[in-house]
Image: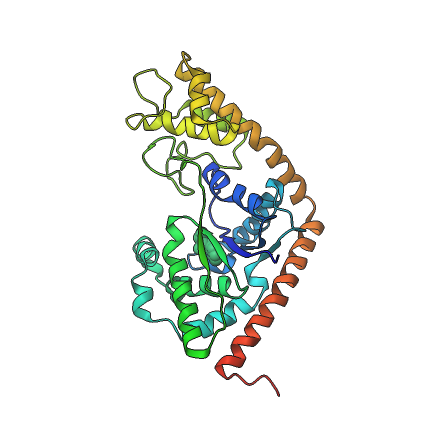
Length: 331
Ligand code: TRP
């Protein structure tokens, strides 16, 4: 049986946290054998907010190396950089003509980002969901793994696909959302009722995948807990619950098993154990990422091959779209 097509992408902006690792990166690895996966580094999306060019370039290769270090296998998926496949921009233009300004203005993320970057509400920011629709629709994608924050974008991609198909005849496959069986969300170590974020202003709130062992241990040592000393998951103990969730995600045991393991221990020992477990999982990943980053020839080859593979599929699809809408392509 043909494998279903799965599409996912990540923006090369900001510092990835351990929440990105358990919530997104590990899923890419898990899904790559079950589906025909297209995994993109969405640098065209990233420039909808200001980026420092040298940093954008550096983050792009770092992200590529990180994903490979985590187990994404370029031989088993199509791993590429979005801007290297020109059809993304080309299809976006066509889809723009079938998308209404009003519906883009109503998108939650556009409204949030407009408020946050009031000095730079550019056309690309508003067009972000259409570019994302083009990403997905170019590859006859069946499923898109999405967290809550990208759900509305996937809905728009579906609407655009249906709209196009109704006007020009069956062309695009209408993608389905794939809700990840996500483990518990990882929260901020300082405000454990908030999600751990790439861009928290408090440097102790988030553990980054690039943090070294000492930094990791220090951040966990400073993690907020509470005044009673029981290591159990409970609604009124968000700090301890978060640490148990992190421990569970990184050690592979369940929260109940972790509770049992730490029964009778103090918070100090507990936090040290969580920090050590996280650091032990990240150490080999960081070492492998570093090794890969020193091998630019290999990384460039991965990107060249990924872009070529994506290009072939995308070119076929775009040509079909051009035919449907009446763009002359020779007879
Ligand atoms: N917007 C997504 C994010 O920030 C990244 C993305 C770009 C994406 N294109 C996509 C995700 C296509 C899924 C499918 O997380």
